[in-house]
Length: 211
Image (cartoon, rainbow, N blue to C red; front, side):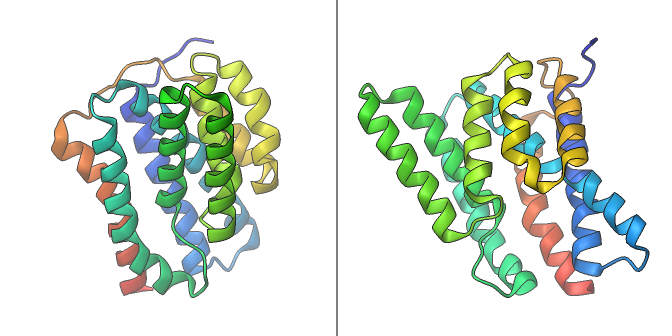
């Protein structure tokens, strides 16, 4: 298969997918077929974000700053998330942050028992904290990291892991990932990077204000 999508295009697809999903979920759609279609398209978002996170981790020069950026925007996203959901769950950026911490531990730990125990602890934390996509999302992010450059293995192990969220949507997500060409694309610079992060809390706030 000829690859033809840069990381920038994957980001655009993921953001559009997420927005479509949240419009359907938070506003509701009277036509059940349109609703299901929008939610299916929405399932492209998380695997694509998790994939980009693993790619970004490998290429970043400052991994501590990478984690700090995610933590900052996870905190900023928490209030609009709670206002919209009215439950004990927490926003998806905490799941992605757990993934970055997990990748860092795999990357730096020299003791396999410490590594395994730390990953189990982080995974259980996402489960108990009820972060969006929770343990499945955390493990998927690690799979993208450990099988980097092997989209066949990423899909082989990732599909069963995400099956409960809707097979067609997740299959579409992996189809998008298969098209990745390994290039950054047209999104450059710190301003663009932080705008990408900021879109998540910003769109949650906008949905809350006009819902």
